[in-house]
Amino acid sequence: MAIAEWNGFTWQVEPGQVRPFGDLSTARSVSVERNEDKEGEPATQTVALDLMTIDVTYPAVVTATGRDPRDEYGEWWRNVGVYAPFYLNGRKFMGDLFMLKSANASNITFASDGRWLSADIELSFEEYAEDESGLKLDKREIAGLTPGMYQQTATSAVSVGPSEAQRRGKMPSNPGM
Image (tube, rainbow, N blue to C red; front, side):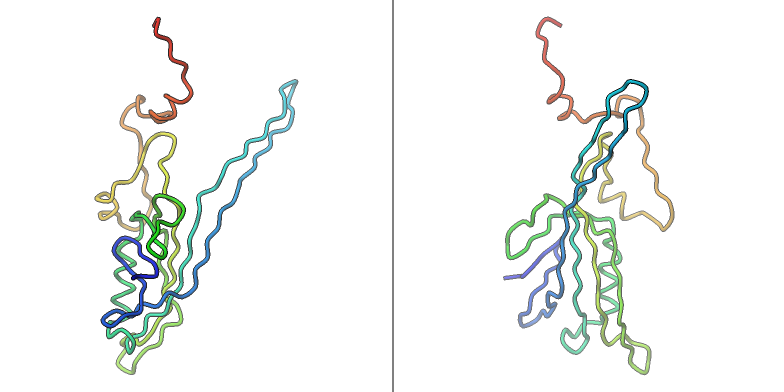
């Protein structure tokens, strides 16, 4: 059984696949915003949970895997922006979806001909949540992204505002209307 899995990538040590699980760190935090009393208005405080993060570092070594570490890094590099569930020991880990925010290679060792012999691959995942406007990147849209700025705008004023679930939870129902 795989130690961890995300979007078809598995960390396990078995014949035919050696991708050892290195370091794992995860974080959950809270943001607090305070607005002081202004001209007779009461002071307010807003508390919100930040998105959860997962950071993974593992070694990719050509002698252990038979795979070029540069190719393995390239697979991760192409998946930046993709979101999927993260499984740890066969169970979904905390949040529903995690987006690969960044993929880095460090401590790269080269052969005399320039091939990568080993590298530490560092991955950073962030919990993926739909924002208040309901805007969400589609996996197909992410595949066509190029480096630089990316903006997504609502196509009409109807799509701006709380999601349908938020509206149902906050709006009182009035059968007389």
